Image 1 (cartoon, rainbow over the protein chains, first blue to last red):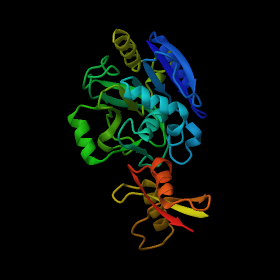
Image 2: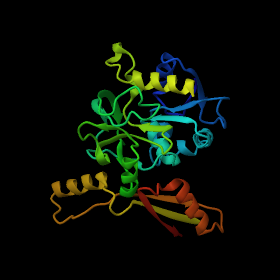
Image 3: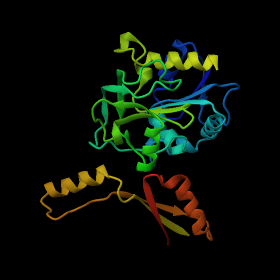
Image 4: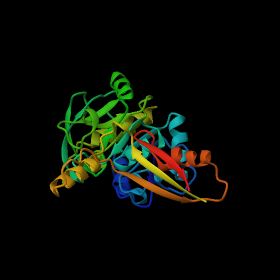
Length: 222
Length: 76
């Protein structure tokens, strides 16, 4: 499986993302935000966490207009896989690849801790390594993770089983405690928690491993 | 020419920062502050003759996230 990790000025989880993908067996290349195209035959694009462009204007807003993001949108529209974590999730909502928006945490504080999550669906290449209803723990580190979406769209997403992860207890004001959502074709996942920071027992947990393992495994077969 | 764009959270979207400001004003002893909404003002220096329609496109594509924000354009 060939994966590309996008690097913006201000990305800071790009190398962790590459390490997690490589550990799962992916062939990873890094792409710079000014690149107008992705490497050939890329299966997965990962948009990492960080503070792209200093969070100027809105988190992810400037990154979403960068040349590489036009290529990422085209990749998704062709049915390619995209994973956006933290700032990457914010970028995906700003590009319109995922519905909704991520607002300032309701408590106004930057939240940096490991939180309890519930896997809501196993029906995606990202979550097939878990069981629906399974509890897991991943680190979060964000100031703007308060997910909001139009109620009619939320109803439709819940009906279509497109909520990937929820916080086990309210964390940041997110509607319905949503921590991660899938696109309509289930090939684009945006999530605030950091699975790439939970792939090594020496770093406090390995609950993120199954995401990368299944993703790499399933996409290779595809 | 200059234009000013006012970006506000849409009515009905909870504004946690505005709420914090409202609370702080109450703490300072200002009674009767029933609501605070916080937004942003963006000033644009534009080539003469730029149409309001083009400014609206700038707002839709970048300056506002119309999922949660509304905007108002003021040509100066």
